[in-house]
Amino acid sequence: RVFYWLRKMILYKYVGVEAGLKILETNTLGFSLPRDFNDPFEVTALALNGKTAGVSVESRAVRNRFINKYAVLSLTRAPLNPLMWSHYADSHKGMVIGIDTEKAGLESFEDYVIPAQRGEIIYVNTNPKLVNSLDAEQLMQIGDSQSFNWQNQERLLKHAFLYKQLCWSYEEEVRVVKCLGEEYISYHSKHDKKFRINGDEWEQKYLGSRGIFLKEFPKEAFVEVYMGENGYRDQRRQCSNLIDGYKVPQIENLKGLCRENNIIFSNVFVDIDTWSLRREI
Image (cartoon, rainbow, N blue to C red; front, side):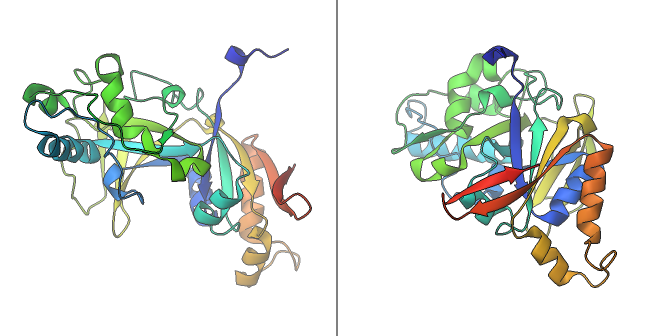
């Protein structure tokens, strides 16, 4: 019998084929600033009571610091969600990568202001109100991982990063939040660069309209790959140099990476009888 507290936590990342190959080739994952997310209400469930300067003024000031000083890795518990495949895995042409959060170090309170085991999104119908208070000194501590952390600001951190509207609940999202700290200063830089946070090397990479923050993880942290229903067909359509007349080089490369790194490779198929997706190893 496997007890709940002994189970590994595997969380999943939906990506296209090119991005998925890059992740597995470099053992890196990308964190994003909340200001670049696709939800216009990101970091607005702050529930400030406004005793210092009024709710509107305080909320704008607090949100501005949160969306620029923290980077977020968005994962999910659901590797077989048809909507997620459509929205984040190139309309079922991409893949899902399973990540062992313990092996990746994503469960560390020392490294992350919100680690994976505390990053479950809370989906609500209405925006929380009048729960948190913050003075000017605490405002300036946002972005300082030593004084503003889970231990002393759990409630506000939850409201900032883990509350979303109920319409997003299909994502079953789990977040890991990294404080960029004083080592990262240039929020609006359009140049790639490397920097260190508490001894760990990070890379800021600019992707045209936004930047992402890349961190390398142990290769054994990547444990599963799900190949989308439309992946083979799409790749063959684009490919002009099939191996042995039918094998797609990119997919063969993906399978090779999985074999070399003991990653379980699966195909995902559409089951029209049950209107669900099924996985076959």
